[in-house]
Length: 120
Image 1 (cartoon, helix red, strand yellow):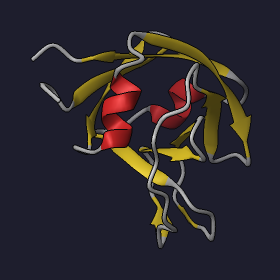
Image 2 (tube, helix red, strand yellow):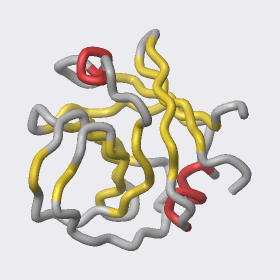
Image 3 (cartoon, helix red, strand yellow):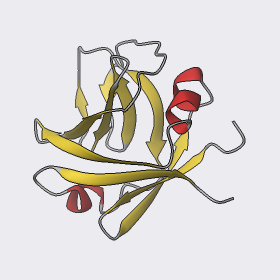
Image 4 (cartoon, one colour):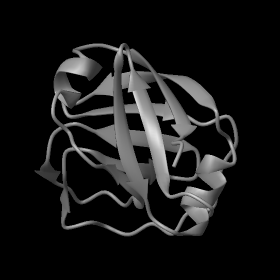
């Protein structure tokens, strides 16, 4: 992976995220540039189906943090905007570097989100 930084654009706000160096992140980036409609769930996350399944290595995190970018299964991308404890299994892709304004940008309903590799 030549860059582990990506831009996540929600409306007029752009967030930078740092991806882990793993097969899941590499397969995720291979689908860029990507714009998807993310669906609201549980007042703490947005999720969407990726165009193609990607390899995962799921485990149960002790806790989800705001800004975590994870896969649920091999094709569901999840962006969390609130922290909480969970018993579900996820594969971590990365994390938004600065979550200031994330909840406001994502809003209360479904939202269009764009992902692209950040310019170094």
